[in-house]
Image (tube, rainbow, N blue to C red):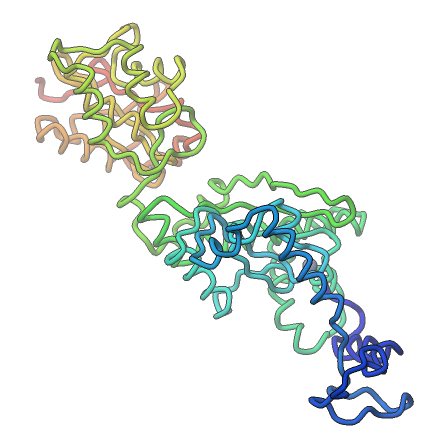
Length: 440
Ligand SMILES: [Zn+2]
């Protein structure tokens, strides 16, 4: 938060408080104030050598240490050994937003970077260093960008006054306002407009994180960190988790910012539709299926399947299992054939943002593979052909969705089959939907 007073003026006013001008009278010492020059008359202007009375701060500290030790004798020894925070917070420098306190977190739980209006700029060596150390060395799992309403930085950036050096920093917020001008310009109430810009600024800094190479590298390698946008209301003390559809935002900018290959590591999904479980490898799931079918009877029941998958997180719901059974071409079965295990593994390791394509041919196991929204129908046909060992040429296939033949040059995105949320609309190619030229 910026004050209308310059920092130097504020400092001068604080130093001019009468109690601070007579430190030796307030704190008599046999040595006087040896580290300081002789006291000056009250009427003299402030000097950087004027002593500051921090008695209360030191006293507060002693009380805090005593309280912590009483509550937990090993507290400081433990903290001193190392730090392993789960979260990295990027917040505003505002003195009224004490991140740890408002989140109810203790020392050691939050790695923190603060600047005016919680900016994530790719030219800011400070935030980049914090990101690198926090993500690559400390291995934080989640990053919070924390903005706050009534933010002086945001207010200053919406004014038309040149604030000198700081104007260069605020310029980034003006860019956020420009990006979202269509939305902001129709908000008549200035306060409402301010609050919305605070939220949009948080959103844009989150997008900056997603576009950052350090973050992308970690996300592609280990499926973390996740990024969250939050806003604190100084007037009420309430913290709000912003409901930002990052998938939608990133879809728009993915081709511009992506510098790492996310196919190396993709978040895995086991249970419901939301979020990935992270780190579960296809081989692990396959092994779990084989263990259940240890007598090689050739199948496992739906209930057994549910328990087997439960090893990797939440057990999938009945609906999710039904969906998976449909995907491998067994819509009405209550048990799954061992020959379809690999297909089922692919269903349950399906990554976010991917559409599952399943080909069912009589007598064959289903052949599923994954594709993204920018793949064309032609690309998919080629991949299908390859998966089938070339027994069907791309030109021998027609892919359909909702009963309509999809054009080769259309991307899945064009066909409305891009996002994870739309996964229900998966393309299922069944034998009767193939247009096999030349017979088979
Ligand atoms: Zn602020």
